Image (tube, rainbow, N blue to C red; front, side, top):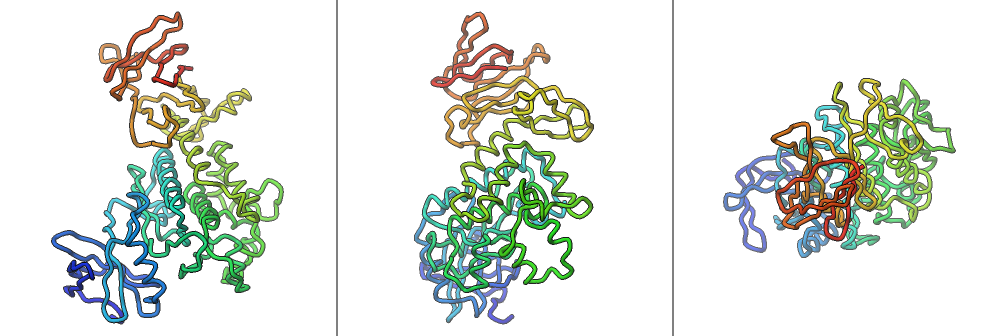
Length: 436
């Protein structure tokens, strides 16, 4: 195997760790990925091929080894191995429970809308943490994101392209189809534009559109008339003449029924506030990098979507409640069975309106507005003596106050539940929630 390693081969890092090659896991353009063993622990080793084992790449990894990982979601470099002029880096081994985005697009895995929103939230949160450290990822695409279809947990690999924002150090400028238009043009005209946080934000929007609409945001009517979708055709659609398939003004590249049905169908299922972010990303954000959707905007949208999921009791389909529809006296219709839905009781806490389904949980974010969507603070539960009565149970160590419509009050210590009833309130310390 040219430039590769053999099973059983042992390499020792400068820090003195000995790694034994167990098996080849895969091969890509840059190199090979092996499973390796060090003192009984299994890791992954990315080993560069000769042409990609460049000095600049080695410097990038050496720098990343000195930096803490932005979050647990990143399979960050842990160690470096060398053999002559060749080298590679060790990273955590990805669990088999994580699947790739192509598996999602091919329907090999079908996470629920709720889980898909968790995946989206976790993804943008991870990149927000990376960018907050002054780094750009440089090459967001299908190949470096993995997700658990049951929990929504994510992993981000191939972090060897991560560089200081805007620096020319990166050895890649992106993957065609995900690259920002200015990078596509820079690659054609050999101009100095380089990957940055702004170009990451464009690539992230493309990836999210793929995940939620099962289609590329720029492949519409213009693509439909192309007979040979070669490099030149892609450069035209992605860089020279990019037009969003749902652009509200420019209709030249509309999604066509019969050719782009996935995009058309899924677009109709999501709330307007979510779709408006894609419109922003692929209209103003297409030409003006400063107008691209920030991670925090995606975070707010995903939290709102998670707050507003309804499940049809008849067909089991998930739908998204949209408060704007209710204000306009427009009924919500379940897409699975065309029935008018009954909106469940909700609790409003500040700007958050959370529908209280049988399995709803309030998160720390709902009380503190801190984007912590992992810590549970309250759960919807049934009264064991009367299953027709539902309550909200305090899962914290704090004591809350339950306020009835007649202003009588009761304390709500840890583990106790308050009846969910319109007009009642709960004082969560500094904030208040009202059942609606």
